[in-house]
Image 1 (cartoon, rainbow, N blue to C red):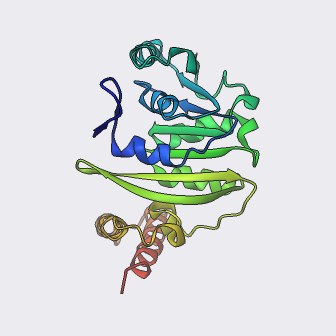
Image 2 (image 1 turned 180 degrees about the vertical axis):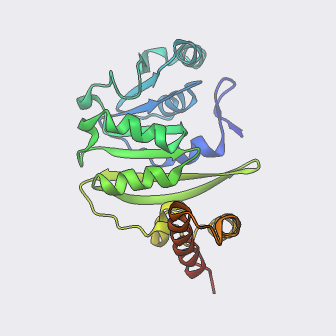
Length: 235
């Protein structure tokens, strides 16, 4: 981790997220937790409005203390709400949803139809179920514009940027790896690809020879994903 000031700590994951946020009308950090990202943006000279939301009061209290200690309390607007529920659509053009499951992120976006507009950039970092998030984005006419991998400690995190109104076509394998043309040159990609390959090989061994139509269908899906992963292998 590096230290912006004595009060604010930014890890690799948050730093990578911040790198995709451009000056504009405003940004909201959904599920802000300690408030490190919005305070970092304020201290770094971000010119638009900075909003931070959380469904629980305790994280917002922590975020408020972070902002107070950094002496930028007046620059960060805190919202107690579920996802984007209380976010004024005209206040922001960048939406950060990070540090939660991909299915949870889908639910937040699904309840905020106003973000289905080319004016908004979504910066999304699912902790789990990234394949569900990508499936939702593709089926709701979002273009996945950027993908990256961040290694921190023993974990590798997926980060993607999306905008409404484009067309992204992903194979079943790409739902898990990310859009290949965007991620293939990432230094962490091959290790992630191999990890997924091993995962689906083990899953196939567990259901091979099953008589159940459901398991047979799942086996066919897994074989297709595995074939797609093998085709991504670097020469």
